[in-house]
Amino acid sequence: MRLKTKLTITAVTMVLLPLFLITMAFILIGGIMNEGNTKNLIYDNTRYMRIADDIFEKISQDISSNPDILTDSAYLDKINEEVLMEGGYVIVRQSGDIISYNGSSNDDNDLTLILPEYGSGPDHLSGFFYNDEKKLIRQFDFTLSDGTNGSLFIVFSLQTLIAPEFFGYMFVAMCAILLLTSLILTAWTRSGIFKPVGELNVAMQKIKDGNFDYRLNDSMEKGEIGEMYRNYEDMRLRLKESAQEKLEHEQQNKELIRNISHDLKTPITTIRGYAEGLMEGVATTPEKQQKYLKTIYNKANDMNNLINELTLYSSIDNNRIPYNFRKLNVADYFGDCVEEVGMDMEGRGIKLNYSNLTAPDTIVIADPEQLKRVINNIVSNSVKYMDRNDDHGQIDIRILDEVDSIRIEIEDNGRGIAQKDLANIFERFYRTDSSRNSKHQGSGIGLSIVKKIIEDHGGYIWATSHEGEGTTMHFVLRKYTEPVTGGYDEQNTNS
Image (tube, rainbow, N blue to C red; front, side, top):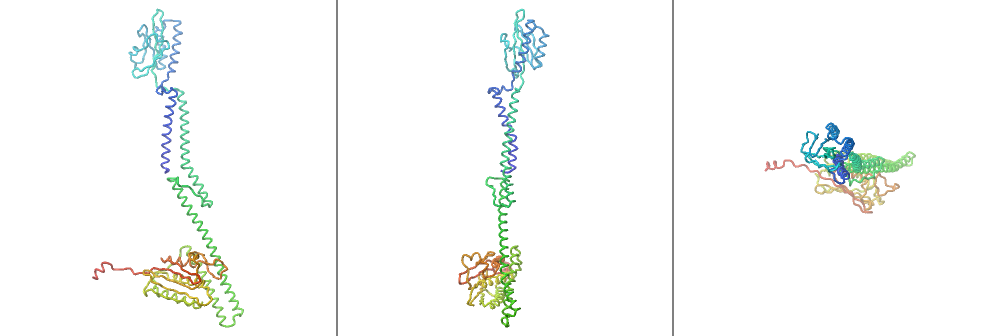
């Protein structure tokens, strides 16, 4: 539920729930006070009866000393004034005739026609409606000294009064209702807003402390709270992924430093040894000196290649490899590459075969420098893991035509790669011989660089291998075709 809806429900509940409960309390308390007859709750007879009793007691005392005092108009006026102060008036009837009537101007004299008869009792109490007004009548019968009978009536016009006790009960009920409403709304608000916000705060504290495994159950939450839960979960997963990537990156950097450090030691040691041999005169013949110098040169090149790989790795890691794409004629470009590589292979005693089965005008869009890096890295890998002692090492480079693309195959007859390792050779720092005591040097990032460059060219690369027979690297590049110009209008013109 959205927060706006919750606030609306809360506001409406704050008004309607107390009103409903107060109404029910009014009916319930009124029913109890009036023994179930709630319509008489507003009529308070007790007060009027007490007033009449006080007046009747006074009259009884006065009659005992003067039986004819109720014939004294001054005395009746005095009594009537007392009654008028309480909202009533006095009627005196003697021998069936009204001798004194002090009703208000709104009363009709016909009221005297329905007064109770003499003898109804000194405590007679009657109530009835007259001219849509509720009348309460108290009757006091008396006898004059001459034996004439008479009655004095006190008439009250009842008002809509409520018993004082009812106010007390309702006050207590209203306090209880308001307290109950407050507890209900507070509990609902707490469970719907404060509780999930508190849980989210705890979760954020976990994130602050580096705990990315603390999850929030967002399946039951809707509206803004649910969105906050889901956003937290997305953030948690991304931060966790980022933290894992950071750890992997740090581990890879450490691995790279270890690899580079180890692999630099071997050529440096070799260079130092051969240089000392030259300085100490160990190489006494020109042929031996030339061999020493060539070895020093090759090891220096190996060191340079390692440094170049490290530089390129940094560019790959930041996704900032500098590319200079342009049109390349396949036959010309790969012919030059093979010629350059062939010179190095000849010096290493490895036979290089080259064949191009594409059309002479086949063109691809590529960065010549980076594509040459791909060729050199693959060939260097083949040479590194050749592991042949019969001087029959061989590398075949083939360019094949595949209609809208070309496929380059670089095959060697080295020791091959195990099938369990074949799927991982393009991963960073993966080495089929994990021991750093291996005689094979390398940073472990050469083939990952190759894969990155080929994919940035819009191509793809894979490898096939058989242990003891050799390995073949395959990569595919799309051909470039000149856009068709002229179109329909030009054809129509030529026709």
